[in-house]
Image (cartoon, rainbow, N blue to C red; front, side, top):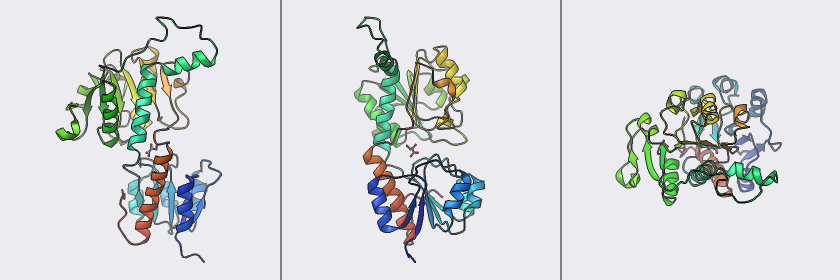
Length: 321
Ligand code: DGY
């Protein structure tokens, strides 16, 4: 019998991570890479010491209650932990870890892609070409919004918010932000702090959401707040879909009250609100924020660093519960 801890991994992971996993653990990977139901997850957890889970694996209280006693740790292959009921895990004495710090650059890059794609109408341009409907350059064709000189309003100025600000500055944008705590001047780098989220929205030529999904931020961008945005305004989301009231944003995009949106995350992924699909002013990506070789490897290695620590009696560096 193997003395190595037994790990179940709910999705395929990058090769370099698999190599280390197989070397150091008795690992079973869901190589079919399919979404697992609660029943399947509980069945796979049988006899396991730990699970590596991803954002689509909904680890609610009920599922956590049903996990076998052998499970001592859940390593989230993500920085976000809103898919895991941390209190339920704590009650069962199951340690939970995440992967902070290693997604910063990749996610900020996707935020810039969304800002550019939404402001410069990249989806409509792609569609025109691929449908072979482009009949040539015209002075008034697909006129977008220039980034230079526009105010980028960042809601949640953590690592990713700051990295997005650094990139946006290079595009000539003026940075405004709201954060629970004001940053020290050396980190603000000239960004204008707003005491309340609503004050921030009033100057948001481009609003970029970078807050975690919590009960407090659920539905943050609602119909009432949308009306406080300047016109035109552009909404960008790389945090979690739950932060946006989809019906309200779709309605505002349809009325052109919001000029465009760039979205990488959606409530109910992968079943996003159907209203988004046909909106030409919605530039949509399928949750690609962290999807680079470097970042996905680093996320996997962080899961393993945390499990290594837990299984050798040390404090896991990224323990959240
Ligand atoms: C995370 O780690 O929470 C991201 O959303 C995955 O890209």
